[in-house]
Length: 124
Image (cartoon, rainbow, N blue to C red):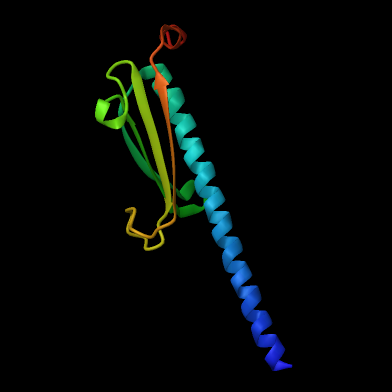
């Protein structure tokens, strides 16, 4: 009986680990999309460049961190004063060092937004 139980328990443990990893990947993707959408609204209204970093402690996930960068510099893929590149990387900080390390699970979303007269008119 023990010969059949040991492999079965190992199989269940492996399945639970995979399920937890899949849940984390889904959270990373959702949070990355959320960060990009949030920054799109801010950039459309104010055209502010910069980098924001933080974690999701308020949601009960202090080990999930993010860095979001908005830049209209050509080196980032933007056009000064006309096209802003928005990039968000959300990662699972497995070693709790508050920095993205090699091998840590991550998800990066990126988009661009143009500066149009309609956005400026709406923000007034």
